[in-house]
Amino acid sequence: MMPGFAYIAPKTLKEAIRHLSEEDAWIHAGGSDLLTCLRERIFEPRKIISLRHLTDLQGVKETSGGGLRIGALTTISEIAENPLIRKRYAALSQGASEVASPQLRNQGTLGGNLCQKPRCWYYRGEFHCLRKGGGICFAASGENQFHCIFGSDDLCYIVHPSDTAPPLLSLEARLEIRGAGGGRILPVEDFHVMPADDVRRETWLEPGEILTAVHIPSAPDNLRSAYRKIRARRSWDFALAGVALALQMDGDRVVDGRVVFSGAAPVPWRSKAVEDAIRGKRLNRETIAAAADAAVNGARPLAKNAYKIPLFRGVIEEELEKISQTSL
Image (cartoon, rainbow, N blue to C red; front, side):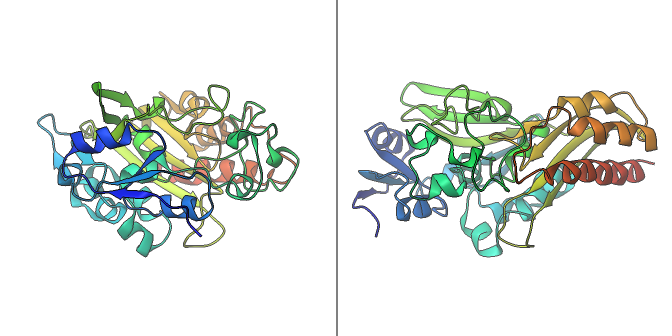
């Protein structure tokens, strides 16, 4: 049974921010994660603020500089199917199309996908874990087959569940955030919180702030991007391993680019080791093999998730090989 709460549907962003600034107030966008958290009593709000009337937070618009502004209430399905995104930012379109099931993609929003809570079964279950204010991460010595191999800080072993955050980070997207004190812009790379910085938070949104839009810079003509997700089942499941690639190519040579893992860490995990292994190099057999080795440098698997090591090696090899072929 869900806890009782007041339900408010403001007509303006200013009104929504005012309500959200109150204690124990939570946003309702698509609701696919919120309703699950309420049923599982992850938190018990006094007030739910629906954003359904805020049409300015919906839709995909081209900006004057040739990039895109995507409202935070834009559904995942809209992003997956948008022709501009599919043409210019394939990684984001592919990532959106891999989210959950068609029903959830029709309901869920981009903002919600970026801000969702961890899916760790200890956090979602009846365990007073470190992230919920307890004194221990039960996954460290428990059932940890789906947990992280990077970035735990020996505190919390969740993996970030978003399939849109890695592509957005690879595309150097920035987030538009509004609150009572005004607005600010934050790179996606700086949005999510490492356990060592604050084990009880997922994002750097402050109380009363709302993620209103995502800005993606214009795509250079030589950009090749892709997102690949490996999971146990074709639908519903979260990533066991995945990678977003956004590479600027000169023929089969990598001029520059970003590589971001999903299913790897408590935050979308940028692999600078892979980036360094391929930057300025031709994507030949030797370079791709070196990149696969670099992908797992520093990985610290737990007792039941060492299988992720060959998965990440394999996904890097396969995706770099695909890009090398399309760039010839």
